[in-house]
Image (cartoon, rainbow, N blue to C red; front, side, top):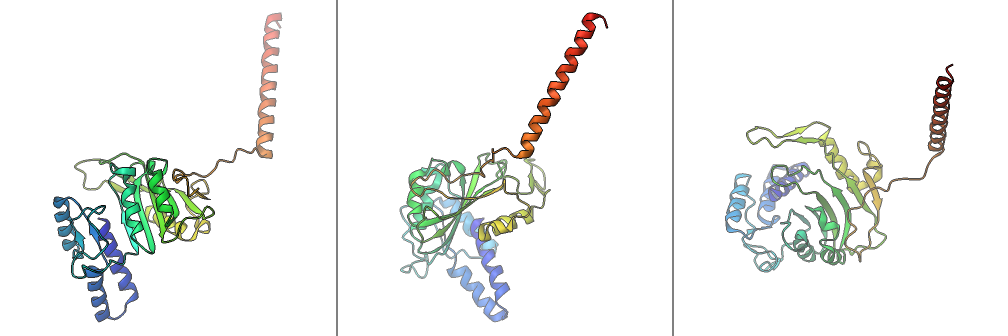
Length: 290
């Protein structure tokens, strides 16, 4: 799914930028043959991935049936087998049962890239301490740009784990003063159901497309793009590159009372005092038979 989505994004981008039909045909073929690479260790899943890419418009040239941790050297799978694949974009939903909740795959992939960007969706415990050692290694060569908390029901029917998306700029070590954008995307605008025989289980009930676009804009441009979301759901902060367990921060809650808070407290107290005085006065009148 991620490889198909990546291929389609590149094809759409090419169509938007290239006006010549002949040049577009050439570029589309180049994208499918040389600008995609995927790895799958399980032979059965590998065959399904190949068939899926062919059905969706090919792009299957460089899907490899290999273990990405031990068998992959970073080269093209076919044709240019002694040439490094010049990856500058990486997307992954790793197996959470792997070491570091799957961050072992992320560290390996990003260490093989010289520049570009990466986005992964992973169990959020990877950012809370379960993958601290891998995270610290990643920050030695890549910068964490954003941490996005996803809806708890994102994988309803398959899994109920809390996931986060982490976005990186590759090739630059994370500095302690680098700003990280923390986004609470618990409400992505979609309502999901788990009805087995339903023809549709995903419903846009609260401006879902606009919400997803706003998250993209917030990651790219920052706070100035806040519109649907509020400052309770968006926070810019820093992490300690030597920690590795502080990737899931939330907006701090302001506990400092305002003048209005003070006035309300005084009003509530006075109302309580008056109520008690009247109650006691009535009880005294009843006792005296008045």
